[in-house]
Every structure is written in C-alpha cells, then in structure tokens.
Amino acid sequence: MEDQQKPFIEHLSDLRKCVFKSFLAWFTAFVFCYLKSNFFVGLITSPLLKVLKTLGQNRFFIYTQLTEAFVTHIKVACYSALIVSLPYIILQFWLFLRPGLKDNEKKVFMTLIAAVPFFFIAGLSFAYFMVIPKAFAFLLSFESHQVDYALQLQPKIADYVSFVLRMLLAFGVCFQIPVILAILAKLKLITVAYLKNTWRIAVVFITVISAIITPPDAMSMILLALAMGVLYTLSILFVYYFERNRHA
Image (cartoon, rainbow, N blue to C red; front, side, top):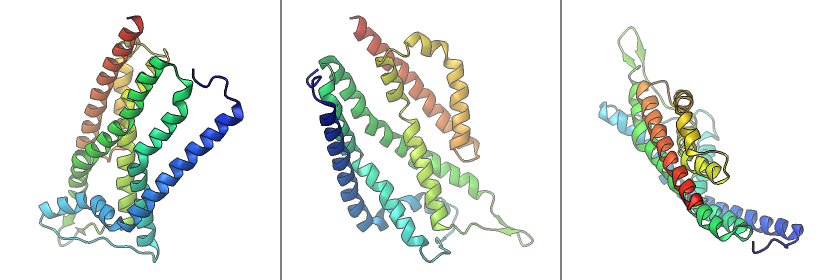
C-alpha cells in the first residue's frame, strides 16, 4: 500500500479535504439547480400531468401555506444537486481510499464505485418512466364524478414532490443491490453458493421491500419485485466473477 506509514492525522486531513470538496461540489450544483428549479419541478410534476392528460383532464397544483412553494423548490434543488454532483462526490471518496488499496483491489473497487451512479440512475429511470406513471394511473382510478359522490384529486405541490422524491430515492437505493453484494463478496463475506442457497429468503425479502416501497397497487409492486429479482441474479454473476478471479 502506498501510504501505509502515513500518520493518522494526515488521514483525517485528507478526509476533511474530501468532505469539503464534496460539499463544495454539491453546493455549486445546488445553486445551479435552484436557478433552474422550475425545470426540475416540471420534471417531477410531469408524470402526474401526463396521466391526467391521457384521462382528458387538466389540473394544476396548489399550495396552502405561504412558504410551501419556496420550500418545495429548495427541496427539489437539494435532491437534484445530489444527483448532479454524485459522480464527483464518489470520485473524491475514491481518491481518498485509493492510496490504501493494493493494485488488484484498486481495479475491483474502481469498477464497483463507477457502478454506483450507473445503478442509481438506472433505479431513478425505472421508477420515473415505469413505476410512477403506473402507480398514478391506479391511484387516480379512485376518483369519482358521480353526482351524489364527487371525489377529485387536487394535488398539493409539497406532498406530491415529497412522495415522488421518496419513490425515486428508494428505487435508486434498491438498485444498489449488485454493488452491495459484490463488495460483500470481495470481502469474502458471501459466496455464489450462499446466494444460490438463500434465493428463497431473497424472494421473500424482495417481496416485502416491494410492498413497503411502492404505492398500494399490484403493478408497481410487481415491477419493482421483477427488477430486484433481475438485480439479484446479476449479483450472483458478479460474485461468480470475483470468485473465479480469486482462484485464477
């Protein structure tokens, strides 16, 4: 290892620089995202408005507290900045960890670290384009336009944005399954045989997580469960790759 003799205080100094640069990157991205917050809020509100349009309806969002719209724009800018700055933040922590790794470990962890933003964006995209529209279509089916029982959605911007952001974040995290299991395999905490033998437990776990994360409609739950099942299978292939290289 390149810096095995480096004093502990220097490691703390390097970590402080890493955290500071990461925060600076996020803050810079936050300023940009806030200036463009109308665009990002538009992206978040688009799925519901598109579903309403297919139903031949035209709605608008409301806010019931004076600061609600402003706080919503701040929240959207914060989350958007995190996504925009994520590759740079990951790079900074990689540069912090790299000197303490062996050459063969560097190659493996560099691949895994590069996979984090890829799978995160994949999770966001899957939720945004597949799950959320299906969920909204299901939830809007409970509207009623009968004379004696009229029930119509009037979306509140803060509640809606919080709901969508939670969904996106949950899917982004769930899609890290291959990366997490690959790291555990690299640390020799799990094996291919273990993953194959515990697939029934994995199915139950995936089903429970899907039921918790998604809205209460079967389609959203099935889509997430299928995606997590594919990711679990992909994880087995990753672990097999690490084991084969280890014994090569």
